[in-house]
Length: 254
Image (cartoon, rainbow, N blue to C red; front, side):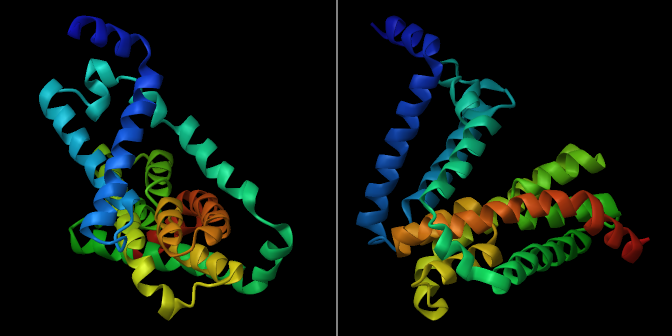
């Protein structure tokens, strides 16, 4: 029976991946409600579980794809790839009302620029403190502080080493988790009540996953607006990271 189950899951990898992720999300939601009373969103717990499973998968198989190296769950490699990720990001924008989106105006553009430049400065400064003094490494890690997507894109464009790219992804993940956890707690102080405020917050925070999960724990109606601007934030970071921000960093550090 076990052998039949293994063959079925291996031959239907993507279906198995959706089922596995569904179980993790269900478990994470339950843990969020029962242990944190909703203050820590289930998405943050799901990411922590996913990272733990990825580490376990790598240890058990000696591979480099984490949990996807386990034969039964090979479909997670496809599900977690760029295709599904980009589809999910684009899908969030379909619930946006154009009239509400236009209300962000100039302040939305300013928040978008600040949300790109300020995290980059913090990330690049931390890279310098950790001993990475070359412009390529500092730019890559700084870009990771923008989002964990901008980091590897910038690193690949600049030819950064694999360990620096990994650090940039880790920096972005930490930021995403902090935004997930912190948004519901700071929602009243930030006055996250309107689509406009959600768009400004999305521009400043930047990370699509963190903004989406944080706003979902605050007010689900605000999620598409925050995610919309945060999506532009990722594109802007990918554009500026390997170009303007790299040249500025190179001028500063030599």
